[in-house]
Image 1 (tube, rainbow, N blue to C red):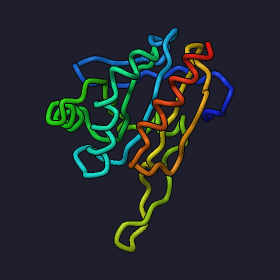
Image 2: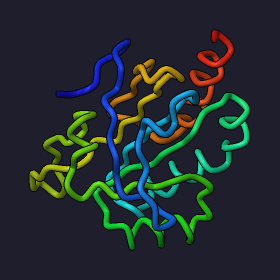
Image 3: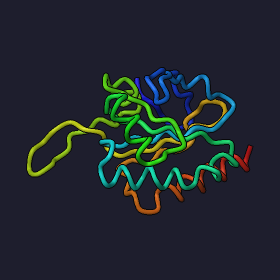
Image 4: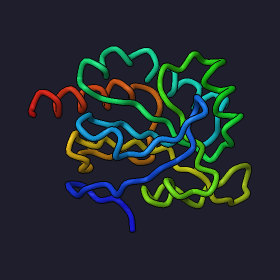
Length: 158
């Protein structure tokens, strides 16, 4: 089972920063940005997270929660969040349950070798829990602004 546009996103629960767990159902009534990144503390992932961090007040004004997800362990996620002063929750999805739900594990090439990894992707879930937008094969530059504009439009249209 994976997500599809216009359909309810199945509930999931994952280990989260701050010594907590997060369930999607807890966020019902708010829009949710779920963004997947390949690896904590790498350049592209740091830039992307910083772009979301720097726009958090605008996402808050659009009734939108930001959640970052990677396969890193919770210690790596905690360190990444602390070092970059991220003001949103990061999820550790070592068992790939959330990654598989959103179908973001793809065959990738690095230095000529193939491996399975997270394809940088972002999903916008509306306040009713339905998938409103998706971005796959994300390029970091300008991405957070594009997601923010979509969140603001969706919020304004409710």
